[in-house]
Structures are given as C-alpha cells and as structure tokens.
Length: 181
Image (tube, rainbow, N blue to C red; front, side, top):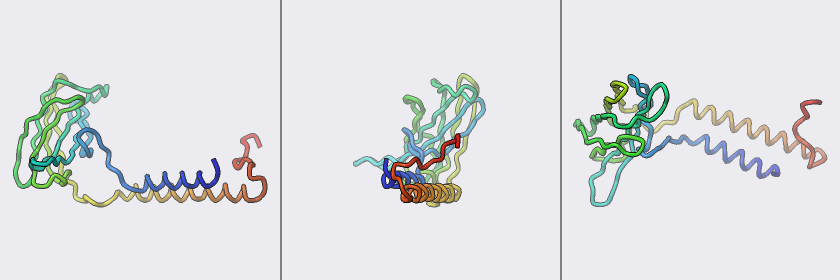
C-alpha cells in the first residue's frame, strides 16, 4: 500500500468517525439501553412512512437476561407512549428478537421526542424503563467531536512521518524502527 492510499484510507476513516452516526437495528435509533430489574432492555424507534397510511413510529423493545445476556422470549411487554400531547398504549407483538409496537404520530421523523414507558413481565420477574425526550436533538456529543479530531490529527501526523522517512532516500525502506534495534 503506497503513501497516497494509506493517507486516503486514514482520511476516510477519520471522516467516518467525525460524522455522528446513530446506532440502528430493526427498530431504528437506540433510544435507551439499560437494566430493568432482571432484564437488560433496549428501546429503539424508527419513523414509518408508507403511502396511504398515517405517519407512525415503530417502537421496538429488545429484552435480554441481565445476567447471561440471552434474549428473553414469551415476556409480556407493555409499551405506553406519550406523543403529540396524548398518551397511547399500542398493541405489542413479539417479533424475531424483540417486541414491536406501532404508534401513530403527526410527524414520523420526531423519533426521540416522545416519552416511552416500557413494562416487562416475564419468567425472571418484572422491570420498567422510561425513556424521556432528548433535549439536544441536533447536536453531536462533544467527546465524539474532540476524539475524532484527535484521531484525525494522529493519522495526519503518521502520514507525514511516513512520507518524510520515505522521501529521504529508499522508498521501499521500512518506516517503523525494529523493536530489536
């Protein structure tokens, strides 16, 4: 791999890390991931927009044993969502790997601006999680930006070092000193 392709790869990696991304799964954006009683509960939300249907949010809840991490099936999951100044308790159905509820809303792209209360009753006991709306919807975490900038600076410094060492003579020279030397 030559210096240009190494530098291009380093810059692409740094750029990918610099842009805040959202974790996603079947249910979309992870809104909460916490322990609730004997369970590890992850709550995800995704906008649903289909022609001819009102906008909605897909709320998916993943339930696992808090100790072993193994998925829990057959639990009774009740999801209550407060959105658009109203509270609804939609039907929840078990899907492969989780529990899904479809919640009609005015704007499907407001995921994360609802209060979602999840109650789980299953073979291990009961648990409850409440997800509150996030205050800073469109801001990137400061630590992510600072860490990405530091990584980018490090990658550029390494690329410059490699280029300087190779520019001084033998272009096939090993740029990293031997550990035995």
